[in-house]
Length: 105
Image (cartoon, rainbow, N blue to C red; front, side, top):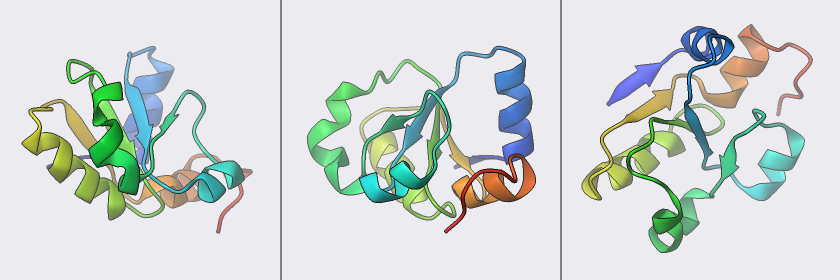
């Protein structure tokens, strides 16, 4: 499983790279904070909604600390997705190291 740090993700986004952001947290978590442009698809809904995702895109999968996103990546990998990155430390790491104005929980 490929990990991507929040610093690397920020640099790649700032460079204009076309990364798709998949947030697998719950809606109430998403409502507190999320990365602009990310797609909300809670982990529990992934088996029923994975067809909404383009397997050709390069995906960065996001959760609170990086555990649920690892489960999502394992599942998507079984479906043939190959361009997957786990955001190391999740949205919490982003709020701590990149955007200290982002709410934390």
